[in-house]
Length: 291
Image: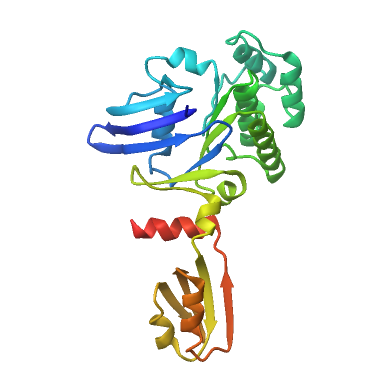
């Protein structure tokens, strides 16, 4: 059974596109990234999973249950970190967390203490006194305090300093080892490269690619720089795209057999050469331009 499943989800806001035929499946104990720029459809997809909005067509399931029909039961086993955090401004952090805990049958106060210590939260402070980063930390603790089986996050690191980002990533890794499934959206692609098992790319409301990090790296997509006086020959290399020149250094992107690339380069007068593995951001931009 897939823990999270989207099947042909479509949502329009009047005449404006939300998402179109979005489909993907997430396994148990998988960390799955959802990548795309602002407005691509990430938040719309998440809101459908949470039952906050209804799709025009298609189905969304969590733990095998329909996100619309079985929303109450699903929410007891899901933790959600919103992209923008807004709680009652006069309430203290402790009051907010206790109120959140009251919605669940069994919440261990010691676990809340552990989470607050981990994220350095002062439970005596009022919400209005908190910085953006501390507000996000309240949302993270609130999402995790009932030990959910599924965690859904919308841009979870926004506002967090690098130390807290690392602590969050470490915690996600620990939860994964305990069988928890994590689904999070991001436009910070380095996060996905570091954390995820697989990811989906979304463009203009449509899924354009679903891949594992490892399989993408094995497709031999390379970033190449060649120092040569023979730019015209570099431009004729098979599978070389986005060729640019800066003085005598020619840059291009390549996806194909490395042996073939080396054969073609051997016919060119080369003074220096650099062949690099791309970052996940480079990979995203490569596929984004192809669609």
